[in-house]
Length: 193
Length: 193
Image 1 (cartoon, each protein chain N blue to C red):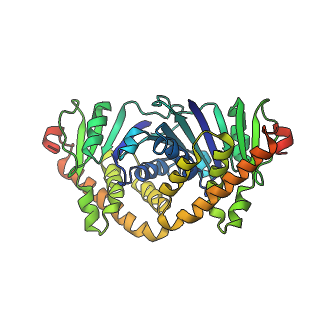
Image 2: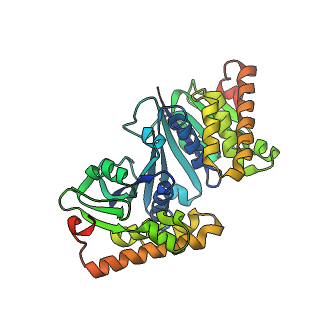
Image 3: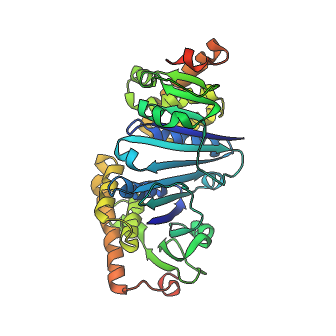
């Protein structure tokens, strides 16, 4: 099992924390291996943020994602830059209020979640990254939700744990409902445009 | 210009934050490029932490460090695992109270700093990683110290900025003094055992 994931958005949306939670869940709470690579460059100076996570059942020799199995995007710019690097048959996950999807490779399955709005509903927009992480957990089925919950708990200060776990559950429930209602995920054109 | 750096120690020593500060300094405050890769795996479950940083004047195609130009170690275990992957002619930086150096490749230059003790002197052991970062900045001369200071400021919560800048300065001064006094750094056997 080897899954290559890219998460991208604005600076301040918590892209790196989301990536780190997913890596930890796999490696520390589920007995696998994971790497997380973060690039700093002109795009970071421009306010973009992106991280690559590799999850594997075996040690990882080459930690760089060229084509992603799963792409999580929280900004239109991130979508524009990275959508072309999604594998055919891959999964696209969008912050559906912030990203308008158009022109994806055939066979990509797309899932959208209004993570910012859901985060605001529990009182703090800042946890949108963890809402996205919960949603990711439900729709990709790559990780044990309990391992991800533990990784969330482990990755935030004690005073923020309750809020972040709520955010995780909110995103996870939204994703589970989407999967249940939709059966197989919808093709992209019906899903997100 | 391309420099490959590995930073390693215990969990809780702030290895990842130090790596991220160094990457940011190069890419965001000095106009270069940087990547930071973090591995989660059995070593993370055992309480070790390690990060790889690449600094470059050009975009980075392959973000994985196989042999490091600079190795920063804050635990004996990290030294044991990674010392063999230091390039000939590379720089070894140790937390000198925690790491006993023995058997390094010829030509490696070694610098030690009692970072934990220096951090305790300014009141908080937890900033040893930023003391190390200041020391790294002084002895490697890879980055503009002002860029690293800005990256420190940018990477910690406002309430922690003053303490972390003090920690940076403390490590930087210790390193600068070492360089001034020693002229060329001492060969390893004289330096750290």
